[in-house]
Length: 223
Image (cartoon, rainbow, N blue to C red; front, side, top):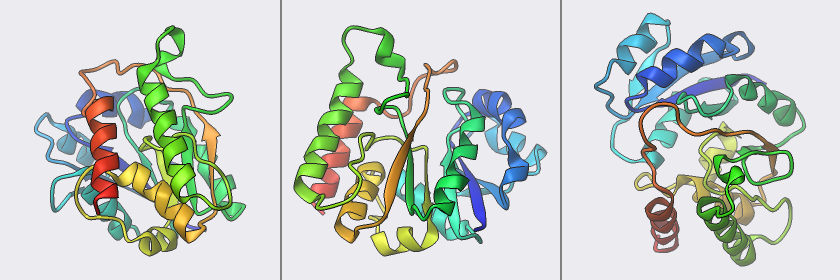
């Protein structure tokens, strides 16, 4: 199986400088970036590292993922956000799972062996909200197969065929939970592996958990 590595960027110059030197680029058949309109030098830095950059044609995370799938010339795509929160070596965990026949693979912060930046706190609102959304999605749409716990993590991989079959909305921010729900409906073979996430060392998150989670759920359910 040939696998593309797609970097998702939007003003992530510091994260790119931290993560790109550690990316196992030789383990992928192609690498490129989808950029949401960076103005901080991210695109120029990626070009200096011989990484093609494609500007997404319209705003929204869904549009970025759709463009990532369209730009791939391989059988599968792994998307990684170079923002200094997850080790780039984690991208190596996808190929063995693709070889086992999985079509949707999610790097999970919610399962045994994983670590979330909130795990050091007594109160973990983001983690609890993600789990609540996971339970709701599985309760409504899952009939068989693996129960996905981390329904709002962007670090994932999929086969191009599975993504095409999902017929994802081309707008909004519902992509993460939408892919999980579509995999339930279409009985797409899915799994997770544990990953470790730390706090962003640079700037703030582009996606706040409460508005993102609420908008993801409402956008998907109303469409």
